[in-house]
Amino acid sequence: MSAQKHDVVVIGAGPGGYVAAIRAAQLGLDTACVELEPRLGGTCLRVGCIPSKALLESSERYAEAQNEMADHGIDVNGVALNLDNMLKRKDGIVDTLTQGVDHLLKKNKIKRYTGRGRIAGPGKVVVEGDESTTLEAKNIIIATGSNSAPLPGVELDGDRIGTSTEALSYPEVPKHLVVIGAGVIGLELGSVWRRLGAEVTVLEYLDRILPGMDTELAKYAKKTFEKQGFKFELGARVQAARVENGECIVEIEGREPVQADRVLLCVGRAPNTEGLGLDSVNVKQDKRGCIEVDEHWRTGEPGIFAVGDVITGPMLAHKAEDEGIACAEFIATGQGHVNYDAIPGIVYTQPEIATVGKTEEELHEHGREYRKGKFSYAANARARALGHTEGFVKILADDETDRILGVHIIGAHAGDLIAEAVAAIEFGASSEDLARTCHAHPTLSEIVREAALAVDGRVINA
Image 1: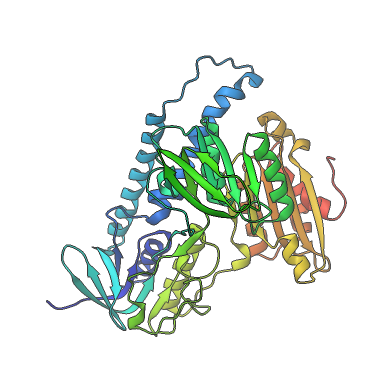
Image 2: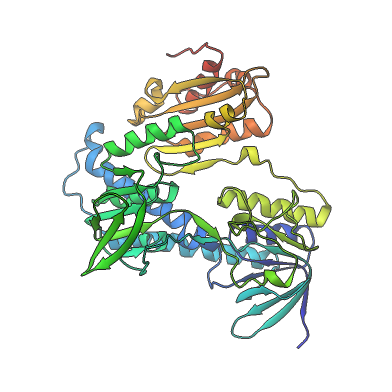
């Protein structure tokens, strides 16, 4: 059987892959997409970003009904959890959106191949499925995403001791959930099950939570989560986790073991490149397993590109999407760009946490002189009306030019508010630009404006 020929073959149909395929097709390239899983959308859509956000939303409403409605003059009696329906709603959202991605590929006339894609030399991809198919293409984009990183000594059984995938579908609320890792995923899924009634203990090897985020933000977040009932053990080196007689035992260096009925391992993610056939071409990987690329996402092999979680940088769906689009545009036009200083990161806890640009620690490290403006949610009328007064907005601006270098937010709807800051950094705006921009009243966005005013020491409402 002769090989199927395309202009572009994308391996992986996650956020980076399917978006790259769509953009390539829009630009007139004959495009194919290879995906192992029957449902499209990658880890993010199937067992990551989307189902976790569905559970976060549902669990937050449950917690509000239990604890906050009375403050609004609404008496709610007999609130009960129907976990089966909550999980069913989550699964329904995922099904709808995965079908939507399938529709998008068909709409853009992208040929889909179901099976494991393996590079078999320059310009050649073998699809290993029910029937093996060979594809030939001048351009190949690797967008195979990432997997949950393992931890030596932790024995995953796919049930009692598992990753985020299992934590999205626990059949009952754990009495005690131990989360190994105080990063974004661990805190989000820990929040879901804490709201639903679980005792949650977070074990973190470092001396802080949310590594990589602004330290002031992380310290504030830790105190807030502790008020919600989280228990943190920092500086905890987990040596082993196993199931004994139906109970999980977690061993920590120099400390007493912790017992729980479920353990969630969240110590980061690793590039998914196993079995990809990289040894058949000139594609190099760094010590973490990330594929090495240049500024145009080109590997060492002409015609082979890589985007998303398989290359360095934050493992975020929107970062992968931007890279997928820019990579496709570079292939078609020779032009493509991503501003890595304007990639936001969001933690969908309550309160939400959002950040973009440089942290104070990074600016200190590079000897960058800056000014800081900060404004509290508690001084904002809309936050008072919502009943969510925890948090603040912090803006960091260059001391000489006033150009915004970083924005860090913890508080209600932080994930929405950060968009203004991302746009400001993308277009090289100054804190004065934000301060001079009219913001509707009463809105949470006024907190951003007041923080911008605070950079110059001229806050109005505090």
